[in-house]
Image (cartoon, rainbow, N blue to C red; front, side, top):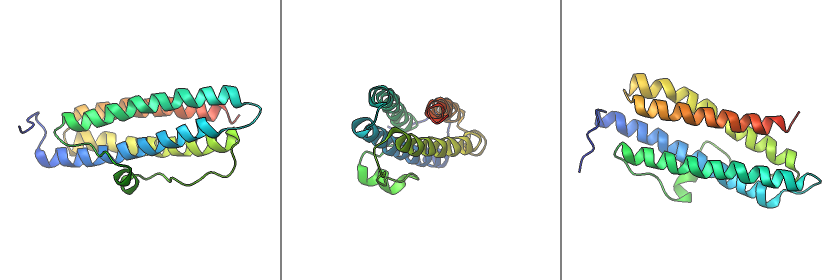
Length: 157
């Protein structure tokens, strides 16, 4: 059945494409955060291991929300690593070393990249595509990523 929620079909395609790109970024960031959780070493291991666990749990919830938003506007969410790696703006590169600061800097850069992309789409979704719901949705995600980035940044002081 066709989704009729007041968004022009061509606009919902554009929004879904942008959300699938976001979904891809979220998956790559999730995997990188899990990797940090599993492989971090050093005198701060216990606290940072637990910190990364909280971060990946939050990303897991975001992933589900983004996929459900895509479905709610009438499109399919990407679901393969192959597709995620084609769509993501993030690098899946290996990190040299396993100390917490190396992981934290890399993850912080990724969160900041996601924040910038989200910020650029907020007005685009509302003004260009007339989708205030998706604009509001990604505003909340941006705020979540800003808090997560702050938490990472605080480790670098």
